[in-house]
Amino acid sequence: MCIRDRATTYPLTDFVARSRTALTIASDRVQAKYGMPCGLALGQLRQIEATASRYEHLPTPTVTVLQFLE
Image 1 (cartoon, rainbow, N blue to C red):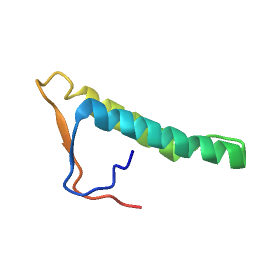
Image 2: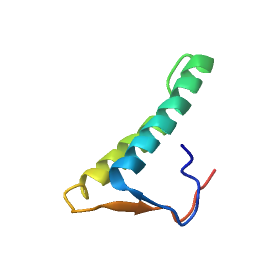
Image 3: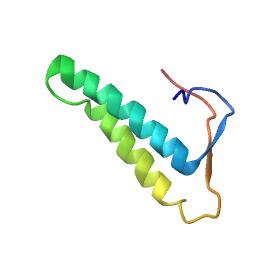
Image 4: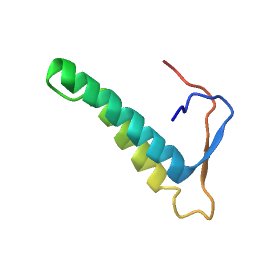
C-alpha cells in the first residue's frame, strides 16, 4: 500500500483508496493510544477526497506523486 514512491502515477480512484486506508490506519493508531482520532490525518483525507471529486468526471484521471513529506 506504499504511496511514497516519487514519480509514480496512480489512477485517481486507487490513490484515494490507498490514501483513505493509510490515513484511517494512522488515525486509528492515534485513537488507540490517546483516546481520540487524529484530526490531522482525517483532515488530510477530507482534503484529498474533496480535491479528487473535482477530477473524477475526467475520462481517466490520475495522480502523480511528486514528493512525499514525512
